[in-house]
Length: 335
Image 1 (tube, rainbow, N blue to C red):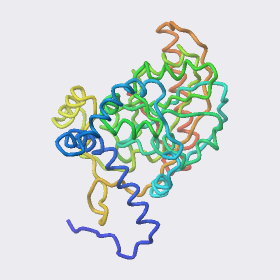
Image 2: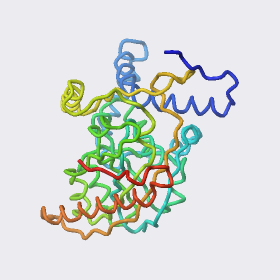
Image 3: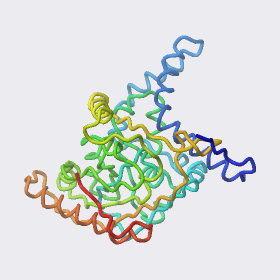
């Protein structure tokens, strides 16, 4: 197969966009592992004191991720995220106001491969979340595993990421002053195994934990659909029941993270690599669904709200899909 190389005369702005997306992909795929290696490698150098001091700090700071984290306005507003936004580009679309006196559980769909829309919209200020939703602070949930990586944990906390466990989410939603929005990529790692162009299948049918969480804290539910999220990468065919899919699912259960075999373009050529395609993402934030607080909701109550949530998410998709050239006969499918 012939390799299609990028032209040499690429504007500086586009080169900076490539650098921004390259560091983002590296951060997502390998920065945690790099930080772990660095932490232990320093112990065998004359800079061993750095790891020792950090280890002491880490011990005293262990619970911070589950207590709202430690976000940094400087990091969230850094110019690198504006270049990341413009690479695709990514746009955040508001359909209704969010009352800052309320707390929210935001369901983000679909997960995609690297959650590009989720990260850029809710962990950075590049797409204007603070201006669109004044008084609301979003916290994107991430696998607790990554908060056990030295140095890396501090980096992801600076973007407002917190562990995806009930304790961490509940800590924020208990705040009666309001203004907290817990953002959950509901399909999680397993959904990424089906993330490919043209896919509209969501892992949601039996995912009800976020619904129960919203009821227990009286937090309004907000459906979000990110058009273009599945268009960024191709993926090796892995239909249900295939050997590859069985191996991926087994590894996902063992490790807690999915391993989709994805590919797109490279840095200097368009034929292969792990850099996402330059395809637009439009993240549509739907209208909040009012939730009545109940510390011990019944299964029937959870099921009823879950059904309503799926209906509102489907409506959100149907109301906007034609703007993004999605055929009228394409609909969301819940599994």
